Image (cartoon, rainbow over all chains, first blue to last red; front, side, top):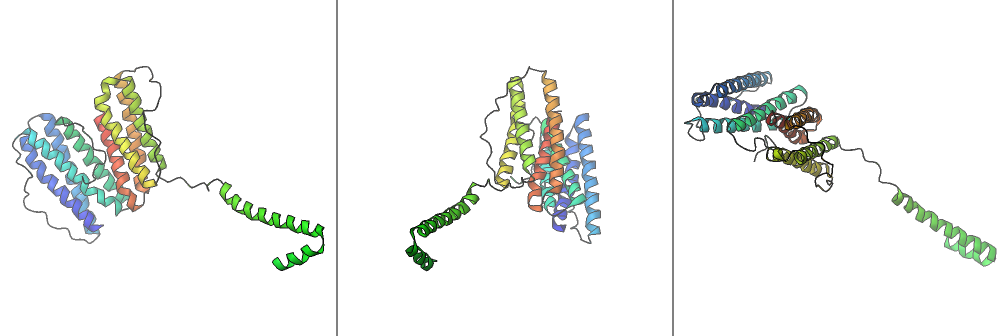
Length: 141
Length: 164
């Protein structure tokens, strides 16, 4: 289970970093509230993963100091695009955790995956991307 | 067996007849032995634990079809969601090893055209109920099925969000 949890942790940390960049480019109260709530959620999941990995006596890779963005984030449109990509990535990172966990651990993984998928849908709606849903959230395309 | 038969046959006609009868009886017994197995209805297999999830996916798809029939204006918004449910049903059927009933819009007479808002609200409630049952199914699933069922649960949650 540790490699899968480690991958989810890496995705959560990347998401926290990305929302720092995204927030700067958003300019409406609604968008900003959304981004702040998302970032808080990712921090919560990150803390859970750090604690769980430490319980399992697994060391997690230190988070990188910086990240290379997949494309330049220069305005609201590119910020929303990155937010969608980040949430899709987090959804994908939690999915493999389902197969290697049971009970409460699996329940937590599914909740984290579902919430990320829902946020991806919210960002798609804000960006007016249709359809706003995927048939199999988290499944690698 | 053959030897005894031959000896007996040589004795009297009566016993020969009886022997033939016995032989016929034996043959019938043998045949009906096979027949018993063939005629038996296939031993009732326990339904796959994911069967209810498959049924639910088909029911959700059908309720979108009905909504679109009664409110054609919602088609562009609802069709992708109905398609997601059909994709789930197809994937679950493949996993379970079942063939899906030939699709085609269920020929349900479209009910009175309710307000679009009411239609959306009832679909949203159905998605939330569906998310709940898929979440429970994911928690109960063996490892090799957990990811697919988890994606279905997450998808239903995103549908509920898309219908807000």
